[in-house]
Length: 335
Ligand code: ATP
Ligand code: FE
Image 1 (cartoon, rainbow, N blue to C red):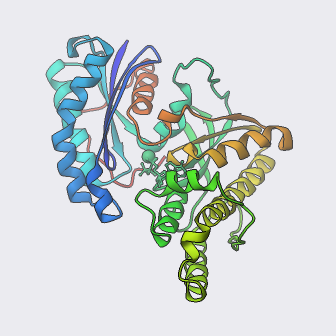
Image 2: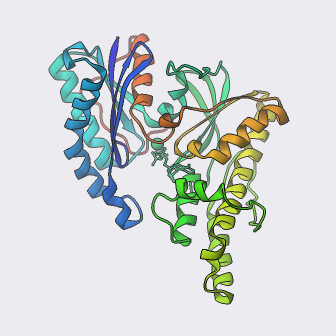
């Protein structure tokens, strides 16, 4: 079974081919244009998707060594994401499936981030049900109880900013480029995580909050640079390490709580922030410390990609699922 996955929810145009659970190609066109604006500009993203989608799909087919006639189904991201971006992938997928007369399969982007763990990949175990998935990305921060592929329950989530935003906004305060997550990660490796202390938010239950941290960092930087205008430059690695350490602490505290409350010790992460080396290490440490078995996705399946859409398409295809041509993109689609 060959399935094409298409992802266009934000600022990456991506296409992947999966063959019986194995990824044959995983192509991503990043949109560099947003860097100049320090964030994604929806209108520009939509236009870039329109330019990229045909070449990206062609390349995915070519790299996989197949033609579109070999495809058994077309899977696409229905939401959540930016409406203008989602519309490009959705319309393209609809026409392609219609033209080839094969099933059309809609995919929830966040389920993709979670079910990326079910891609056949050497050296990577698939989590057994039930497991806890923490989705940490540019738009979400959730703890999800995954009972089965399509039986998921959000048991905790952020009440304000997502963790990826916490990275990106902190980076902006420090004058780093967008997105700042990877840059903070790189610098954190060279710094002392305990050099500066930032207050952790107090949020009940399994929910998260990150907007206070951003404000705290902003005041801290304002205060310090008043005394020493070169404060950021002189301490950038320590600042990054301390911010990252605080964020990881917040995430791990809630995961610990969720694991204790549900009695589930199989813990997976997904989403762009799970590329972070600090969070990966903290999760691994949890195996010794809390008796967890952890599942960390392959690096290229963490930030937005179409392989994760293709695997969900494949799992749905196996269940005989297909959707109607009148399906609409949904910017606020829930798990
Ligand atoms: P969502 O999946 O919620 O719709 P999104 O698709 O925009 O949001 P992803 O592509 O999954 O988000 O993740 C992007 C985020 O991941 C950005 O905020 C980026 O800074 C962050 N990120 C990427 N790599 C790292 C890293 N190594 N360390 C920390 N953050 C990272
Ligand atoms: Fe994403």
